[in-house]
Length: 362
Ligand code: F6P
Image (cartoon, rainbow, N blue to C red; front, top):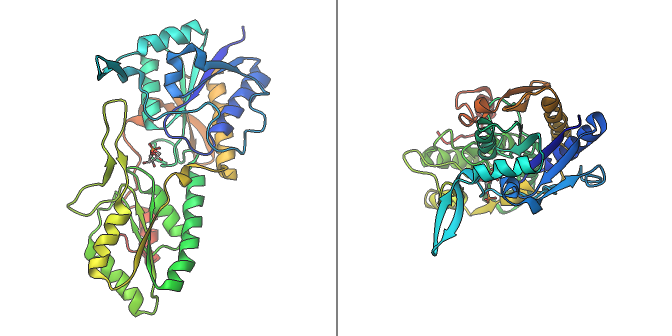
């Protein structure tokens, strides 16, 4: 008998989400003749049946190159810890049973959760409560274990590298130090790889707490050699040795996460003390999450979407699709979400950066 499957996109958006949705609908309908229900606004949509609507081949027409997600998303709602107003106060309630009742009421046989670490942890909890769930790894941060790459990361890298190319010309004209603050949360992948690709002189990542003195010396040495400008990439999660991360907004409760941001301006202030040069800061922000996905991300997202449908057909629940080398394989969601995939401070990419003469803050 034909299945009915649900799909939701959770957490921060990223380029390629629509490519996954399209691939899921196409392979579910074309290969298996299944129905697909699109759930709006992440897990929140499962608390409101009006947000769960059929997706057809027509609904996904033309969405492959579009950034964002036609289903909407949120990085707040966690049904196991849902914020509710009660007597003028916000309390957190476990609504997971309501979610499960709604999945059953909709007749959904299996759920595809497209998300990063936070959303996949929720998916895992639902699977422990008996829901047939499969995961698809998404995030510009590339910080999920078990997969070589998450989709969205490659597009974010392109955006950051393009910004570095543009900053180079103006930095050189004005003999300035330009700092580019990029996203990535607690991982330095975007900063490190865009910094290498964009010819940065200094890259600061969370995995290597930086010391100011060698950074200043490196910039002074460049000036002395005749390169009177420098480009610094600072991951939003970077922090000084012995100091702490700069948090733009604290997490309010268990349904939200802390927001990082501000390291670019912090480093600029520090550098102004030790350098006799103009320093300017660009915070790349959500530009990294927007725009059309690159070819790599479109292909990866499409392969993940098709694999997720195949995993349902094969009964591989509680598992996540992932990229290993050139192959798409499956791994337990539990393994992918146990801890974050961070840059190895002694690994090959870091050594590459060092051998290119890039200063990494130590
Ligand atoms: O996880 C993706 C990400 O873009 C991080 O790199 C960043 O720290 C965070 O989300 C920003 O979240 P928000 O959309 O809430 O500002």
